Length: 209
Image (cartoon, rainbow, N blue to C red; front, side):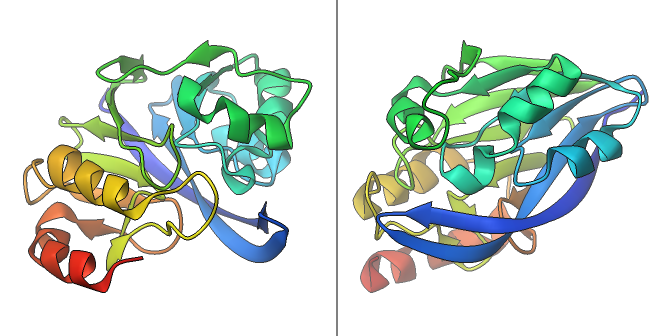
């Protein structure tokens, strides 16, 4: 059975550097009728578990460790037995939210996470956060970009642990090289495509962040 992609929007707060903002997050569930992977367990473990249903949840993959993308991960893992995956460069950020609970496993560039007919290749794309990753499935024609690339430009780089030239390099070298028809499913807001964003790279650089 071919993998399918489901989107759940959860609401909560993002906190960093002493500020707090209300946010809506995209939680992506990828798999088939029997098993699935969750990308970014945001805010509401109960709602995510309900969306997964009776499927076996094999992995909770964190695109990065800002609190709004990981706050529900331990509770969801405890409930389902799923493995929490994070890139090790984001452990310091993770510890700000979960000081007493480490991720279960470390993501590495080029690694493939398989579940329910999906093959998600890890692309390390630092900039928004040191350990930010995107997940590319050529079979689905889709890349899950977390907060690295949005409709209209790069993710924010104005806070701690972020760096604008680095995110531009990540997008140019790791994402804009994907086929232009590739769907871009983001951590917040609406989807886009690689082809829609690629022409604007020079504008982003000129604008800076």
